[in-house]
Structures are given as structure tokens and as C-alpha cells.
Length: 155
Image 1 (cartoon, rainbow, N blue to C red):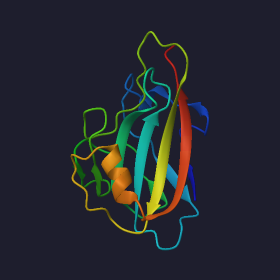
Image 2 (image 1 turned 135 degrees about the horizontal axis):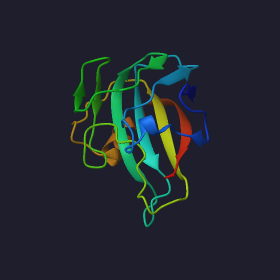
Image 3 (image 1 turned 90 degrees about the vertical axis):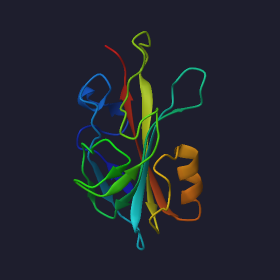
Image 4 (image 1 turned 45 degrees about the horizontal axis):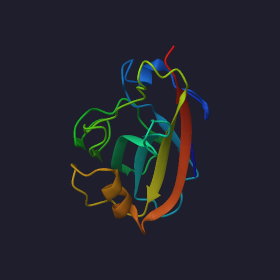
């Protein structure tokens, strides 16, 4: 499986539009080579460069239907009904996409990784769940994993 984004390439800068300093909307993802038996997708977004933490979770979303293009601009809230159906858990204190937003004093680019998982099921998971609960629920159901890393730094 492979994941791409038309808005930025792997290991390149994430446009401000998709950050907490811009419109803070989720990007569109293109999924290639989806494995047989895929029922749903889950996405985790982590900042790998937060001081004093191994990584900082910005977004968790699951029960995304099997599709080749996951639309961008997913709305806020634990349960999404448009433009697709999905569930968003608690990341960075909210149930929504929370894009890159390193502190103003940090001038070094942060690495943001979108992990995309193809699952053989839909997950029965509470919408107030955090990343560790999502990872536990996915255990034994992951058919494939792909990731896309984007960079962001304050100007």
C-alpha cells in the first residue's frame, strides 16, 4: 500500500493551509495498492519533534470506508457523516484534525507523519478514545500500513 497527497510530497513542506497557523484542514490522501480484504482505514498524525516527548499526537480517525481518495477538509466532531463516514478520537484535546503548529520560538522544521492503516474490519471504539486505545483496537486487524511525512516550520 502507498499513500500520497497532491498538496505536498513525502519529506517536503506542508502548506500553511493544512496547519494550525492556516485553515487547519485535513489534506486529501490518495491510497494506492489497497490490499484485498480491506474494510476500512485509520489515520494517525504525530509530530516527531516535540521537545521532551517521543512524539505528539495531532489526529486520530478511523472507520474511514475503503476508498482510493480520502477527501480533505474533514469536519470537526467525534462522528463524521459528510463527506464520508468516520470517527475521530481525542487528539491534542479535540475530536478533529489538528494540523502542524509548532511553538513560534521553534525555528527548526518539525516532522509530521501521517500513518495510514488498512484494516480488515470496522472498529467498535468509543469516540473519546485516544491514540493508545486506537492502536490496541487495530491489533490483529492491520492488513497494511503506509505513511507520508511532511515538514513544517515557522517562518
